Length: 228
Length: 228
DNA sequence: GGAACATCGAGAGCGGTGCTCTCGTTCGGA
DNA sequence: TCCGAACGAGAGCACCGCTCTCGATGTTCC
Image 1 (cartoon, protein in one colour):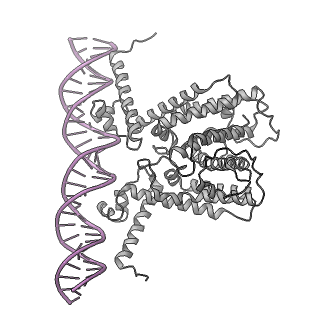
Image 2: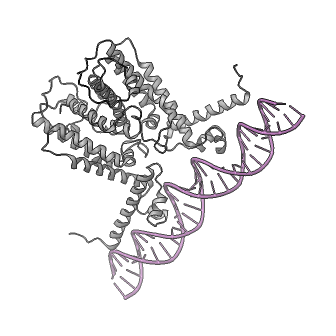
C-alpha cells in the first residue's frame, strides 16, 4: 500500500530541504559556532519561530548537518576506492579522497572531527553515517588479507581491545588478521584524521613545507604500518 | 633599575588573575563554546563592561586560556620525561602523561586540539607554548639517535618536506635522522593527538573495549614506527 | 599639597541570539 | 462540510558580546 504523499507533506519536505540547504551554506561560510538559526530562517524567507516547526532546536539542525557531512565524506571515500587496484594504491587513493573532501569543506570537517558542539554525547543517529569511511578502509584491509598480501599474524595472541563488531568491519575473520593488526588498523584510521586535523587546524604551520607531499608520504607510512 | 609596581598595577594583575581563574573554571564546566564573558564577570563580582578593561574581547580571553592550556600540557609532558630511561620508555611515559592531562581537562583539550574557535588563524603568541610537547618528543628522538639506538638512515634522500626549524627540534643533525625519519616523527606526533581526539570526542565508542590498554599498544606501535 | 591626568567600575543601551507562546489562517481527513 | 492538526507570523523573554558615558579613585607632576 504506497500512500501518496499529501501536498502538505511534499511542501514540508521541500521546506525542510530549503532549511538544511541554507544551513549548509551558512556552515560553509561562517562555521558551526557562528551558525545562526535566525539567519538561516531569514535566508529561506521565514520568521525564526517557524523553523522550530521543522527542527526542535539549533542542535538538531546541526545534527542533521553532521549526518549529511558524514554521508558526503563517506560517499567520497567509497567513490575513490578501486577494488581491483593493489591494497596500497587503494589505501592511498581513499586517503587522498578524504583529504580532498576535507580541504574543500573545512568547516564541515571541523564539525565532524573537531570539538563536539552539543554537550558531548554524540547523537546515536550519526553512528552509521560516521562509520562509512572506516568501512571502506576495513574492506581494503580484508581484501588484502584474503588475497594473501598481508603477512601472517605472529600468533602471539594478546588480550583483545578491539570490539567484535569493529573486528568484523576490519576484514572479518582471517589468519592474517589478529588483534595486533586490528589495533594498527584502528591507529592508522585515527592517524589519518589526526593528520588532517593538524593540517586543517594549523598545527603543522611552520613544520610542514609541502602539505601535499607530506600527506602522501605519511599515508604511505601508515599503509606500511598495517602491512599494505 | 627595578621599578616597584604601583598599587594599581598590583591590583590589576590580581584582578586579571581572578578573571582568568574564573574563566578557566567556567571552561572546565561548560566548555569553550558556552563560555560567557558575562558569567565570568558575575563570578568575580564585576559588571560585564568592566572585564573589557582587562581583555579587549571574549576571543582574547579565550586566547589567554589557550596559552595557559598549552603551557599546562607542556609542563605535564616535560615532568613525565625521564631522560635516563630508554627512549621507548620515555616516549610511552610522555604519551601517557599527555593522555592523562587530556582526560583530566577534556574541555581544555578540546579548546587546544579541537576546532579552532576564533576565525581560523591561530594567534601567533600561542606558538611557543603549543610547541612544548613537540619539543619533548623531539628531544627523545634526538637522544635516541645520539645514543645509537636508531637505525642508520637508508641514505635514499627524498626531497624534504619538514622545515629546517622543525628538523632542529626533532633532534637536530645526525646521520640517523634523515627526512624520512622526520616525516615519521611528525606523523607519530600528530597520531598521538589523533588518537586522543578520537577517544575524547567519542569516535572510538563501540570500537575500543579497553581504552587504557588500546592507548598503550597504539603508542608502542608509534614508537616502533619511529624506531624507538 | 594640590592640580591635571589616566585608570577603573557601574550603568544604560544596542543589536544579536535561542527559544516559547499566542493567534489567525490554511489544509486534510472524516 | 466541519473539525482538528499543521503552519507562519509576531511579540516577548532571558541571555549574549560589545560600546558609550559618567562619576570615583589612583598616579604623577609642579
